[in-house]
Amino acid sequence: MNKPKYFPTELEILGYTWKVLYIEGTSLNKDDPDEEVDGYMDITRGEISINLLAGNRDRIREILFHEILEAIHCLLDMELEHRDLSNLSVGLHQVFRDNDFLKGL
Image 1 (cartoon, rainbow, N blue to C red):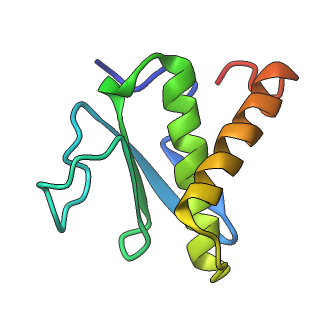
Image 2 (cartoon, one colour):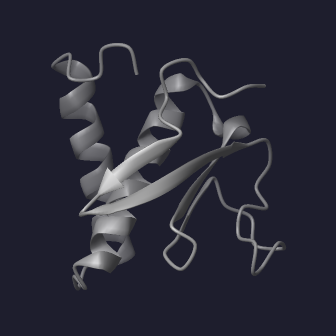
């Protein structure tokens, strides 16, 4: 499976350029390949990795939103619980999706 059409391979997040990698599988953490996740943000490498097998296009967008928020969370040294960050990413994704902010993505 290839990167979904129109999905970014790079993102500018708070002045930093991040690579976005689309991988088939849950071993996204290069430092701990046994950790199984659908998305992973690596602040030291400036990479966001997305598991293409995690679900449909909508689910992959949701994971991408979550990992973008993880990057913002780390860069701004915010104090959010992971559950709160997850809920925020689901809510923002829904608002963007249902109000045509995601055309083409």
